View (cartoon, rainbow, N blue to C red):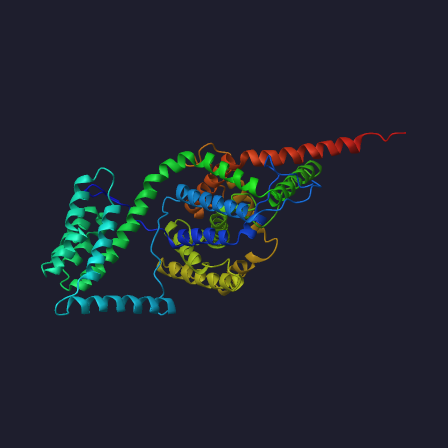
Length: 500
């Protein structure tokens, strides 16, 4: 938000629907604090007991609950501002046909109708108009920085309500002139994105409509100022985010002594699975994990701040995995006749991406959609072959292609397992890099069709993981230390000979 009578460029990029909904979901989760408390319970706090403790649970007071909720809310908001470069506040308009929207419209219309009748009376009544100018003055003053004394004095002088009342008593008040001054001052203070709104205000003749629109534009300017403040604050938050989040999380743990139980259980299961996998590999050389599902872990404390973002990445990754499978099948079957046509592969990818939108919804019929993609792929292939003067695919090949597409969703599908394995390998390689943005790992075979999307998604995931490690590393280390040392002690105890 520009101040001191000078304009500055305020970013006009609005957050995407996914960004807005992501933050809405994060903030909505704060309203149910009991769910939040269950989602992260800790044994990392210096004040909390271990999960095996026999001490009775401490009663949490209402003030402690509210304090933890405030800490969680502040931490979530700070995290979102720091990591989401597109984060902005925006006005939420009520649905036009909703009851609340109709009530708001009726009340506002009644107010402006009353103002119009007062100004058109003989003699006119100015009290409501004067109160509006008093409110406008305070809003304009709120936009100024401490150094804007000259403009501050001018606003106070022109919009002096005592003087305006005296003028009104003698029928000498110039309402239109005051409105013109307000519009001119708004033009000096507003962001460039509001220039068209200011021009429309200047072109409006009806004084009541002018006042109504002045308040509308002032509301937009207040939102611009808030977003400019956020933009200015972001670099500072990014520098201080790790320490800030860690301190806030520690405060939450101190108010919630029932502790990081779910995170502990997740880490315990992961350690056991890793140890089991290592033992299996040792007993059976060449054995590999053939799990078909790749889901980003979400039981860490980061669930509170990045849970929705991780879920979105998981859904996008699943869609990319399907697209890679379809591309691999197509290349294996008809690659010889459509080879050397990169634009054709991109066209098939776009068709698949459109049809796979919403594939993570419960009502989504993946097998039916895969069949539709197969049919459409055959149509596109035949069209391309005809354009090149080549014979089209026979019915048997088309049926085989469509059938292989439809079978992707089946359990233990070899194409799916292969693509899943290679994506996991790529993600692990990405997390091992010191700076994923500067040096990306080589893309495994079969993933070239989704390389650009996978690199962007992987970078986002790596950023979340690296930030999560910096913030919560000490808590995880404490959990791992207890788990590993306790297992080691248990192993030694089991190995010791019995006393005779």
